[in-house]
Amino acid sequence: MIGIRCLPFVLAVVALSTGLATFAQAGIYADDLSKCVVEATSKDDRISLVKWIFEAMSRYPAVTSLTTIKDSDLEQANATTGALFMRLLTETCVDASKKAIKYEGPVAIQLSFQVLGQVAMAEIMSDPSVAKVMAGLEKYTDQKKIAALKE
Image (tube, rainbow, N blue to C red):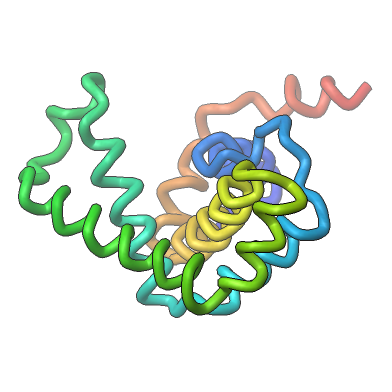
């Protein structure tokens, strides 16, 4: 499991990778939409979302050499994620979607899916194999310098 001293670094990585560090504030309608999309997704839905994020990020030039994801895999991930978004916004959470857009604008959709992404990432980060890798960061940090930041 992740050591308590390493936890701030892990949380920072998760926050940056899922959009938590956004400046937009969710209102009550975006909050309602967020709750709906999280509650309406299965673990498999959230895994599909994380796969889509990973596959999209694999196209960033600095990391393309690390994966062998085919264009057909990306197309399938787009189709699966698009279907998930449409189901959530226009069927399962249609009332919450309408209110969020009406009262808070399109940013409410973005914020709600950021929350869903955070939930999905939290599930992945809690996997023992992933947590072990993340905890490995601790051996390359100076805990005394980190502690001095509190002073």
